[in-house]
Amino acid sequence: MTKSEELFKKAQNIMPGGVNSPVRAFNSVKRTPFFVDSAKGAYIYDVDGNKYIDYVCSWGPGILGHAHPRVIEAVKKVCEKGLTFGAPTEKEIILDELIRKCVPSMEMMRLVSSGTEAVMSAVRVARGFTGRDKIIKFTGCYHGHSDGLLMRAGSGVLTEAIPDSAGVPKGYAKYTLLADYNDENSVRELMQQCGEEVACIVVEPVAANMGVVPPTSTFLKFLREITNQYGALLIFDEVITGFRLSLGGAQEYYGIKPDLSAFGKIVGGGMPLAVYGGRKDVMSCVAPIGAVYQAGTLSGNPVAVTAGIETLKILIENQEIYSEIDKNTAIIEDAYKSIGLQTKRVGSLMSVFFTDNPINSYKEVATCDTDKFAAYFNHMLTHGIYVAPSQFEAMFVSVAHSADVIEQTVDVVAKYGKNV
Ligand SMILES: *Cc1c(COP(=O)(O)O)cnc(C)c1O
Image 1: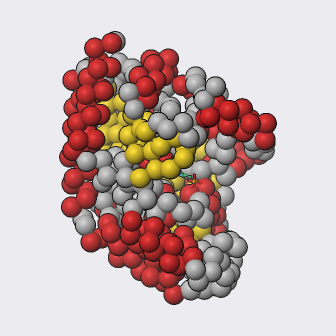
Image 2 (image 1 turned 180 degrees about the vertical axis):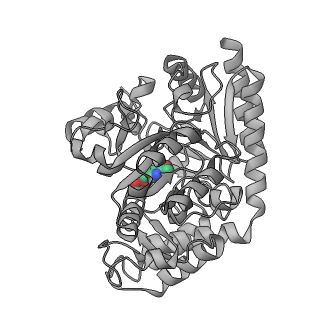
């Protein structure tokens, strides 16, 4: 038995499925997960001495690669001053100002500790501001695990959602309406039925939690217009796209300004930190100046804030990073295409889809052959490359994925092509 297998056995006795977040259990690729010892740059090392090129990058935060020396140094230094105060620090202002410099729609914001919290809070603010209860989300988009956002389409009436998890009260389904990503008509129909009751439409501007599904050329603009028309707010969940597609996130990339946004992953530089914010008049609803309550003991934690500041500074000082990772991801994409696989890519976000149906939305994603995906995953891992252990996740490329790492990846993909 390997050390990882031993640890996984122990872990299963004390954690549900042996993990602290379900996808880590490798269930959909039918093998036991490796346990990590450390990671540096483009590589992740397991407790059995294996070294992998890492295209998961902690599910998105690692745009600079693992353990960037500047970030580590800054974090070490700030730790000596104390880990948490529960009182304001200047660093929070510095991080907020950096965020607003990159993303001008973030006029006023709140720091929280996870993407789940950020989106949940943004939705509450939208409800508080509009005085409306209903929200629209899209099938296949993930916004964290808060009750109202864990909904999926029911089989009956178009508008009828059902909880996507046990433990979520059925009553929530009354307030969460489901539309289809990239399907303007599905949104129009819901708005015609009850647009005056809709507080917000929440969307991943590039869907990246059903595999990467880019928006059509008109979709985001349509969402902007229809929310304006009905007096609802538009919330961009940029937890993945923020600081990844560009410094200004998907809203800069596509030139659409939402009312509120949520950021996570990269913005915390590898620490538990996320942020929500947007229009000043809307964010003025938040306590203590407004009636929408939201709080956090560790919100704005100085260590996490420091990691965020240092990460954003590196990105701001080195903006050529974005064209570099775009170019490198395109090289990997070409390797997949040349062995006949379907890919979708926006910048350094990419997915390979095991289906012949052209991917536009969740319907087509759902037709993917997950057994084929599992075989592909196992091929990659056996050859030293760690991609996300699920068909429905993105591949993340970092600055640390250098030319030779990319070349090695292309070779392993080509080898996979010969075997299928
Ligand atoms: C990861 C993710 C979340 C949830 O963030 P957590 O930090 O895992 O709570 C929300 N929205 C999107 C788009 C995400 O990718």
